[in-house]
View 1 (cartoon, rainbow, N blue to C red):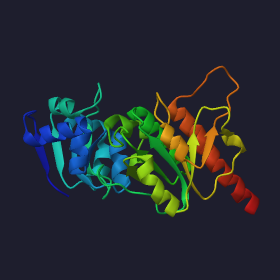
View 2: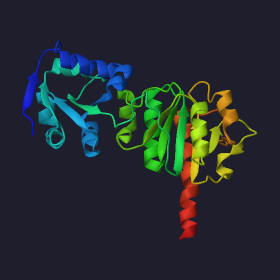
View 3: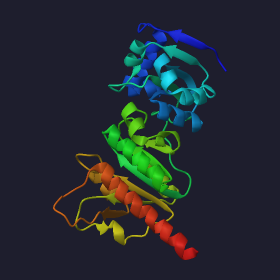
Length: 277
């Protein structure tokens, strides 16, 4: 286990680099690194086999979260005790717990490395989603329901941003994530793989999601918070689906919509398993 080093200055160059990673998606993806904050989330990263390059904590955090720190130490390549002022500099929260991990992204998940799903399963694709809290919530729900992976299309917010990581409650460490510059760029690969695409739209003439069965290779595509899916994306999908609503609201929050749609996708799989049994 590496020895503990001590940093008290906010002017330390390494600390400045870590602070930059917390605040810049461009830096995170250029270097393939991201920062995890909070005792529970840091432990989750270590347990999920995410490469932990460094563990940073204050003396107060080590005392308060001793059990967490001890377990994360076993996975960390570098260990550093920092001052409270340094913790404030690299924190993304108002009341930092004082414990952080510098982690490496899984190979190929840098933003400029597109990937497509190559295994059968039911996937969720999100197009131009801008709210990191929504993205994190979507990923947390996807993992809980057994979705095979999440595909980020276009100009989505960063999967590894601090807010998305907190909202996802560790889903980012375990859920397969794929990237593509656009639906149009991804569609030929999906077709080659035999995937059927479903566009989620708030339209009365779309098929109610509750009336559908989803094949083993399915991709549900949802749009961003304000504008929904691009017109060309809707046109490029094989089917259009909608969530039946009996109340007065005309639409749902993007994360809420995604949760319902994913539940319906996986509910049909559960019913098929029960019928087979």
